[in-house]
Image (tube, rainbow, N blue to C red; front, top):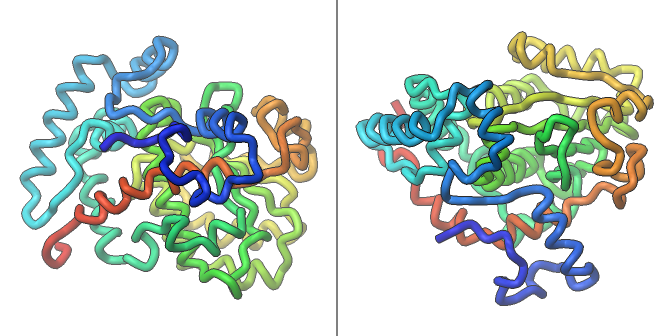
Length: 318
């Protein structure tokens, strides 16, 4: 069943909790965060050139490497994995078409799902409405100056008394997985904006731990085929160094170089991202940061997660 991105196909719009929102604007926002396709070659010519230059990809190599990767994955004893083209292409592109590295990443992806279900099982709006209500993480319509997709995180909005931290983590990995069905995102990658405004020392103590840092850096760097091209940190408090010190040991050199600290200087952020795509609180012209489009899109595709629950290791993980 194809991934659904069109609101007109929803049987029960009321179930999406979007009655107070203009559906045309909401559809535009959804189109701005994701353009899903079951065909990984369904990208614009300008992005094909990026794929060729950065990923060493040609249409022929893409098709052949998907075939090779599928054979390798099929040979893993006890693993019942997704085999569709768009899923496998994400791992290939995430590893620049090194088939062996992509194969290892697929296995690691399912390893982590089996070993840490509290962090890597699916979290969808119909079952985890409270964590989506917090509105602290979402994809952002638009792109940066290099055509890369965006997502935002506001840790101060996380309320551990309402929703445990592992639920937020599961929500994040759920969103990443459905977004990876966008072939353009696979090629161009994503950037992350982390707004640390109003994050108190008490919240930091409750939210940020070596265990969380390890899981978060692992999932971004090794366990899912997400090409994180930049991390923009804004409004960081005076004790940011203490926060960064928890994450730094787990960060690879490549990702460290992609972290930009802007403080309260929104003009510094705007050198990377056009303000037209940013919410007003970040010096932009869009409405206040919200997860409405992201939440709606995940809700529209809950049937996909029900289907994907069948995949994984059928016996003890090696």
